[in-house]
Amino acid sequence: MRGIMENVNLLDGKLAAFFTLGCKLNFAETATMARQLESHGVRRVRRGERADICIVNTCSVTEVADHKCRQAIHKLVRQNPGAVVVVTGCYAQLRPADVAAIEGVDIVLPQAEKGRVVERLSELMSGRRQEAASAEPLSSRTTPFVPSCSRGERTRYFLKVQDGCDYYCTYCTIPFARGRSRNGSIDSLVAQAREAAEAGGREIVITGVNIGDFGRTTGESFIDLIRALDGVRGIDRYRISSIEPNLLTDEVLQFCAGSRAFMPHFHIPLQSGSDEVLRLMHRRYDTELFYNKIARVRELMPDAFIGVDVIVGTRGETDALFSEAESFISSLPVSQLHVFSYSERPGTAALRIPYAVTPQQKHERSQRLLAVSQRKLHKFYDRYVGTCRPVLLEHSRTPGLCNGFTDNYIRVEYHGPGFDNQLLNLHLDGWNADGTALVASDVMPSSQTHFDR
Image 1 (cartoon, helix red, strand yellow):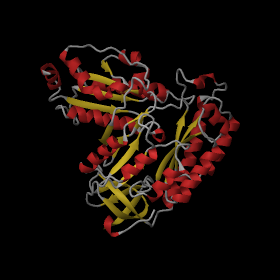
Image 2: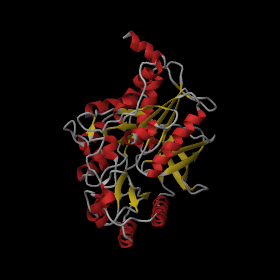
Image 3: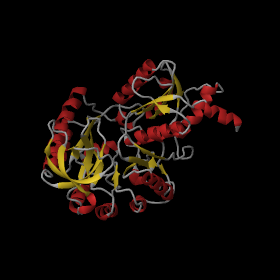
Image 4: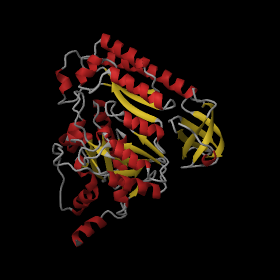
């Protein structure tokens, strides 16, 4: 015991820098690692300070993401000479030898050991153990669920409820990077939500890799989870970060439509508007199911913000199939598209599909769908100019300005005194100068007005 305490004490007074790439789940896990280090005397660096410890939480969804990870590592090593550099996340899991070969990297931390960052740093700094790249393939037998409920840089908390994926879509490396689907228990997740509420949290984003698959390891269900979370007093808002259309059941939709705290906001991956491309991707739905799901959301929650993921330029996506996809996507009554260009990943089944799309075609298709997205987003925002919506305000770096989001995820600017983490009913006056948000005014205590959803 004494030896362990001595190792932990080696961290006291150290300064740490954190760099995160990728999804909300990565940001939640980085915040948890930061909190673990802070509990052992480690402080985040401030502007102008050099870090003793650098932690990079990586993404590997595309080759561009891999490149950004390498750039981030090189930059931190250059800016913080002599620092202990820890690299974790999907890129570190999939390419551990490549990461370990980068000059300045000291620890390659597998996904399953993100919860052991204090222990691994202490061992290295004590001189008892030198790290090598060792990221074993993940499996449900060997990979535990690592909990995380952490506050982001703004007012919201991120609650990790599930990790891993059993779907094995042909273009995706996530099952190899994060392992099989697994989750925490409902009791443990409710307890974490209560802790967030006690710490002053008012909004929680439910995160995971495939959260609709919740319950694989505990025999529970996603609908039971959200019912339990809805009962946690003090949390005024929940948002579901992303859920597969085939797992977004009517039972879940009906509950969200009438719930106390689940917001009218959904993020639903489509990936392609062509049934043939969906088949090549090994997605578990077709365009008819997807369209009917969006229509059901609109029926139950007319004001809902609906974000949709789309990938362009996958193998097998001919000009005709893209035109078919573009037409279908344009017809959807959604609020925004998140457009990604396909990137070939080593070891994926997509590499066996004939017909590769050129980089120029990918760029052109991406621009076309981004234009569709822009039109949809502006149309959605325009619907609410002149109305009042509840807004959870958060701090801004600009004096006299607060940012925030309405219940249905409209970005808002409010010019007035600081109301960080306050829920207010605001009048949406119109677009700001650069067309990125609606300007709000007319503050009233939220308790004075009831908003039906």
